[in-house]
Length: 307
Image (cartoon, helix red, strand yellow):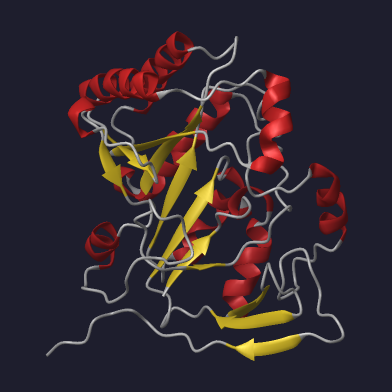
């Protein structure tokens, strides 16, 4: 199986110790987001995990644990955008994040650290020209430390609309998408970085940007050294080309506070969730409850059998 850690919250940044304790114990438990009384008990031993995909905006707290991941194949999706703390209040300064990116790349190899510059939107402070200037600087700093950059444009989910309006956000139109893709593609190519989109309807291939897959079957097969079964993840958006995975995160637990985040239904619920955090619990920011219906999921490797 592919373990996604996690689209729902920044586990490497906020809950690295909990995750490593779960690996040590060999299992974890996850509530169904729609039916919280339904709990899946998931084995996460190295014989069933083919690859771990870490998603993070600041994986520095995970770096001390990298030696304990030697029995696992894994890679990082590391997001560094051009926004300041008015948009991403819980994150360090960009120069510190760039240092962390380089440190991580040097530890595990540049092919295993994928840079994300997303989501892209405009405000009076973050114009197209500002994005291009920032992207140019980041590419120069990260040159030789990553092979790939993923971009996407803001999806204006209903529960973030008010926050985006407060910031004066404008979602790029098609012409603007094409222009910024064209400029980004040129800049990235000059720095030896391939650029692709994440779950976008628009075809930007003429601008030098191809459709990408964040959980990419071909990439993972090359990483693990064997062919795999497994199809498209049906739980993701139609435009998403990721292969199937199991996400172990919990919504509204991330402390980064990014104002565009789709995974937080409201920052007011995060302190309550944090109160439930126990590094030794099988749940992330949760505990067993009376009435839980626990089902042990049958986990197996996706390694394709010969013959």
